[in-house]
Length: 125
Image (cartoon, rainbow, N blue to C red; front, side, top):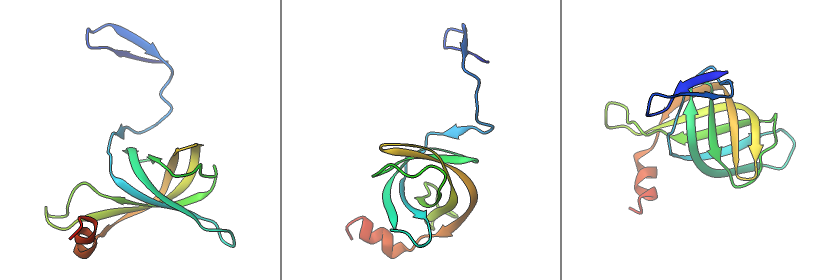
């Protein structure tokens, strides 16, 4: 059981916390692609709803298949040295999926730099 306190200091009992890591309410654009050889390409775009070191919850265009591997590309909110835009590229397994959102457990990730030209085009420049 999870016991916490509210703003008045009163104890609140809730269901046990299942996650081993904290999640942060980060809202950034994201692209996803279901990795499944010899099958129709399933991909789309959405936005992160929250991010933790163990996973990402994000909005989707369609319900994603639970158990499948997914590659995610997230526009990272912090720039390298305050100048260079970054992108988080993560691969993981879909652990939960609903009509318009999915949760992925991250198995591998890396940060890549984003092209400044892509930023200008996205901004309409």
